[in-house]
Image (cartoon, rainbow, N blue to C red; front, top):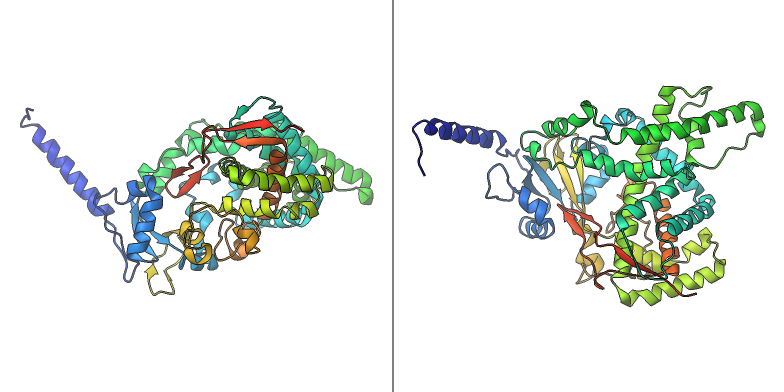
Length: 494
């Protein structure tokens, strides 16, 4: 290959630029920090191992460097907190914030402006606890009817085996239940808006955070450029909700004015927001409508995406394990006969084998990011600086040998039943729903809904994987996603 004299300065400048970037981005640790795992590729650091081999890579680092340890990922030092340290992170919510940690990579505040307000999260949690969890028994019948409608619509008659796309179908199924809790489930446009909202927003932020090698905020600015230039695929969902929600709210205000003390408030979250956002509201203004729609979509993101994922995971775990089919089916048949097809909370509580199976399915590989608001010294004496991202390495908790025996990564369908650990209960070895006072307030409704869905599906269909084997989950970094192979449904003979 021929190189002219003129190309030499270009190579020199590239070398200088690379060296400057390397020098600027070289990780600098404060005094007494957790150990930094060595890496071979400058600037890139541990990014590739973390993205494509996280499970084995993190386990190896944990074994060699203890808990916690530091990695260099996407241009910044990240502290990985395992079984010993993660409990401290969850236990000091004033120091560590998960919401703040995801702000740059998942900038939802660009769409839902209310997220930026300090009281938004508190009011959302309060709405879930008081408007949903506290009234859970009252929602059971409605959730059951809505799920059966969805099952008939999304899966239907399978007298001949039918391959079902689990990604879209189960999102709509859960979306319809959430819409029912909001009292607008009869509108298919709203159901589709709920089902597609998170998917369409994810399409905006789907670019890998390569610009974070420069700075996380650079990445945020670039991935949100389409929004600033008018490309906003989720704006249509907000418009759809506003269109159908406004007349519902106006009718309720009018009924309150006419009926006074005789007004009987409907049982749904919309009524809760109507009474608690601005109790003296006399007219539905655009600002008020924007605010209540923001709150609703926050609930949609927190519920539909995760609940549909957990339902899908559980179905794949069931479909790939024929040894569990008869046992779980027999429990559902027995309960169905007891309730004559109309489930009550008492009957759902009797699904002890299904509950235990679900708990085991939820025990999956994951990590949750938290950002430290101040310098913090862990109990083992290591210190991290203010602003540090701390990934809670949940696999180190969920697969520890003390709690789950010598083969913790094996599927233990009745571990929860044998140890009296229901699926919705958090404990020191089960952080699926977080921990402490900041544990997910919607976990009771989510488990309730998933158990109803699984009960009805197992009762009505033979379910198996196309391969006849356990389908492997899709791993992106430390996160697990459901397989995309689809599931085969075949109607049971009555």
